[in-house]
Image (tube, one colour):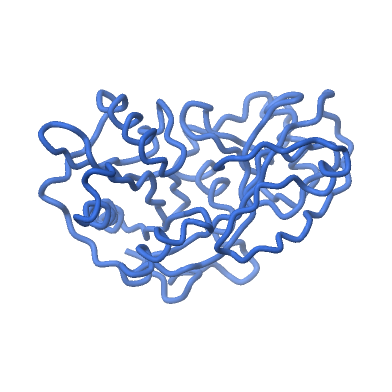
Length: 291
């Protein structure tokens, strides 16, 4: 098991190599989740694809090999098609021609001292449990969970009188790391430590195969962040998350100019749902709501 000696992981790559958690969605799609990666239409071009995405009913994010490379955005345009909404993280700047629909701040935390243990009440959930999972997620809003998200990894639940009341599981899997996600508890059963128990149980399985747990949270979700820090997670980074719409025309090989985002103005503990500078100037009104 590779517990981190610092916030970048105990067996960090050479300084010149990117850390897998710096671009976790891409690292997962080109690593353990490569079998789920959609790169339709890019392989035929005879060059390495610089964009990929999860199936829309598994996880609502795409990824770029290098978000600062205009050619990667051209590949993403080819992948998703014209005038199509897609979510990305982390992104510092968006090329001209892409509309920023909404954006926010997220935090990434890594396991530095988490105590893990199986839970005798936790049961492994499968495809037959998805309707119950979706119902619990709709009532508690821990983040996106879709019809086939269960394919991403192990999901554990706790039941009370046969009803699912708490959930946690695995989502992104960059090499050597596994994200804990969908942590939620029915409001009527909060205050009993069920979420913490499930996080420890999911993490026990992650440690057993030699990976290190990490997780993401909205920067404004200070209660969850405090909980995760109290049980052994450490804040690693804050990053910008965007939902963008691709240009209306067909993708071309011409690299567009990047548009730097406006200053957020808020601390890392708040989320901003505002458009980037290019959208503000065009008069496009961004949507609001959680990413």
